[in-house]
Image (cartoon, rainbow, N blue to C red; front, side, top):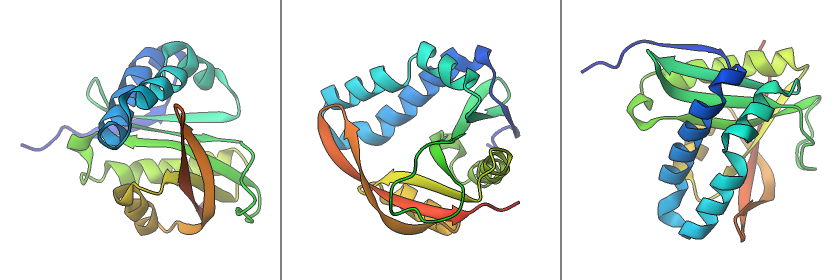
Length: 176
């Protein structure tokens, strides 16, 4: 069965609750099996509540992109102005902070369309370099970003609950 077509739009305040639920689901599915439940729960509680999402949606330095398939959220991404780690040496860096695609949509072309929208959002924020942190134990995501043209330039810490982990830092020049 072919999934329904999707479209990508800018997030609005009314998206806060659905995005919070979607992000918590995707994060837990992705990282839950390899981490302590209390660490995943602590991170989800601190990062994905409706109030946190509302604040992000209203923040002028964050662009939230929502990919919808009919009434359902199929994916979302956030690009933000944020201090880059020292290993990011490109001009005018902006961060690809979050990039989530629900499993039924993986391999459908949605991720590539969402990544194109990320480049446009980074350009709108005045970025010339996009950087991201991706869990070093997430080979599927690392491979996807490499396929998109990102290159590994170093690492930085990521705190998941009380567990200090390392993210690979990857960069790409913004495509206009």
